[in-house]
Length: 466
Image (cartoon, rainbow, N blue to C red; front, side, top):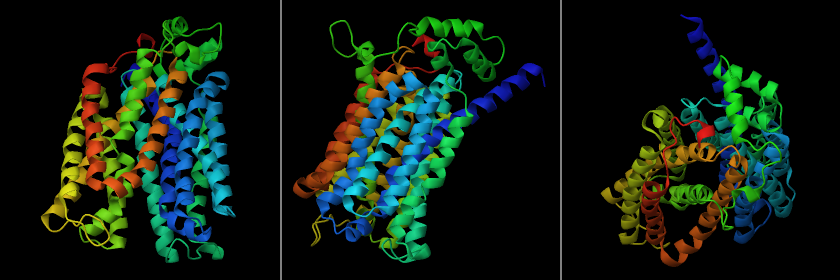
């Protein structure tokens, strides 16, 4: 084996290591947003909260995420990517401890809001850092680590909830040391939150940030480990694209006529459509859906965990092919698949007879088709819009505007998530499940045309050439 091959292998291993550490933020992002699923009912009982307050306890964390995402770029540009990760880790830890010891619904909402800010910060910092530290031939696969970490985080949170609830008998029953099980569900987040902060302290700062700060010798050291060989030409290239004389500002995102730059609008469009296809809602209704097909409550929980596993497998497929086929083909395939599967569910739910409780009664083969369509939909989202949007957001903006543009795009993603999560119950109540899935089908069809007409392929292009 030649010394060049050895050097390339060790630099690839090094890049995977630091990208993995940054992606731990994605793991916490998934864990934090999913861990509340198993605790909602017990929470409402413990604090004697009505449905409005319980809904706020879940959804206000999403608005916290929008705030965190919006300011993360500014913090990352001023203090560096690593310090922003450490700050997020501290907020994650405080939020996990606080949520578990909450005395009432209002302080619980405060702790969840704090966790939401951490989630939003992590959702911006990880893709920006990974894109800035990855060689162009690996950038798609390493950028997909963010989504892989998110879905693993969701899966582990569901497993923890399931294990704690089954061991205690229910979420409100006492678990270890006589403390209610639902409190332990939140405390399971403490170890990964601390690990994230420790990992962040062990990884180097982004070379693009270091060049922007005039710390070129440090940037050269980092790039030598990432790329190997002589990196002076690369430093020079980065210098040309980074504004040295002042910090990036949100005004950099405006065009001459005062509106947002076209590329920023495209980033916002990708973010909003990723949520408008209803991915977060499919899980909300899953237990009723599986029960309508004839499964027990315990089996429904098991199927939700299986769907989480499907999500992980499909994200691995995306990682394998995103640098081979490119970003655009995967998004197009995903949009077509989601349109058909969501359309199938909208048709089945819209035409199913209702039971006494007003739920669609899916009997026989219709129930099986709905079950298959729901999992195929998760599959189509999992290999395309789930991971690839994060890859694109990390790499589609040039060096001058990356952190600020990513902040706005990610903040809009959280606002869209909030809108979809809070409008689903009223749509369900007044218009029915068929109409809800009809709207998500329209969003999936729109996403196809959006990709065809507005999104450019970024595979293999250096960040300095964006």
